[in-house]
Length: 360
Image (cartoon, rainbow, N blue to C red; front, side, top):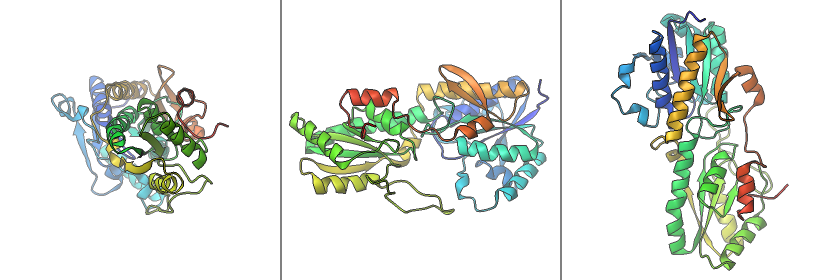
């Protein structure tokens, strides 16, 4: 059994709905064991910057508070991709921060990239670590769902519900560009739930002819409007990136495929005029769904149970209807999980007549 007395918790990477419910779950479960919980501000920055930035968290922070019901992160988050210092330098300062606070373990709420990076920091610092998967992209391996994905799907589906009325009024084919990085989970789930006519994802090649054929079939059916969902990571028909934009450290920035397709369709097909809606960071916000709240509580409490039993370097997961955990080395080896081209969602979409790219 573990001799843990004091733990830290931080949220890393892009924010999403459900993070605050995770924090609440971790704090409450740890409090039952008599552990002290330090909330680390702004991801790893709270431990690597000087002075340290943190606060002691108790059940009183959330017992009569709206925070567990809100999106965003109570503690603030950090995208490690924009840090310019070397990983060795950050790891050394991280270890100093851990020792200054006297932490015995750290709970990291993040995607696969964040957990990989921070787990290395924790190993260097000699502190236990358990990860909790969260991302609207749902591309963290070995878990069926990550915290935040379900709420993002709800935001995208609601957008389609709202767009269909104006599409019908003006006889247009409206394009909704959604997030997801290089994974098409969010686009495909929303397209199926929102009854779209076309859904393009990075994992499945498409053709302009295929899109136009679908729009023409819609028009011939007598319907005067259509909905197209496209994931931000989709490339051109020939496999080229739509934009060459990069962030501060040279990583690519997705986006722009909606406008690209709109111009392409309008130049080659007169049956529908297109307009583009880029949903953007609205997908990270909104009231967390009941599923995301429940998942947050389940995974947060399981993280504390693992630490209590002496486990470390593991990620909790919800897989095949069961709460499990996997070694972080196994998570990293599995890599980012894209949409399976033969998933039930893709199969169902094809069966109901949605165009989701070329069949392989």
